[in-house]
Image (cartoon, rainbow, N blue to C red; front, side):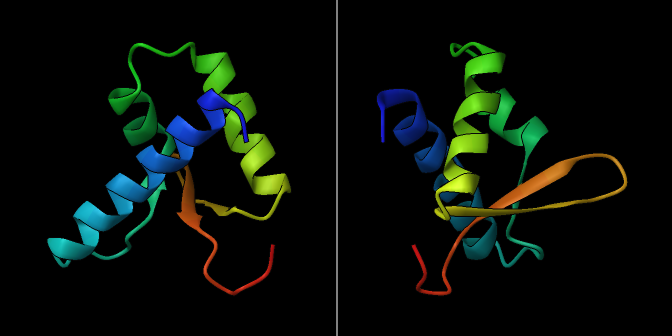
Length: 78
């Protein structure tokens, strides 16, 4: 995992944990939330990192009406 992938993964984990502590459901991180926390990073690099993390099985993703969402893969597979 390279540096941008690690930062992106940590950002998704941070958003999810914050929502879980606030008892918000769902505890997923939307792309908008990820980009707003990673303002200093190039958005295309963040997209590539999300794609790579999803392909490697570290993140799972889905789609809402307005946005994509990501969550930490917790099913034990890697």
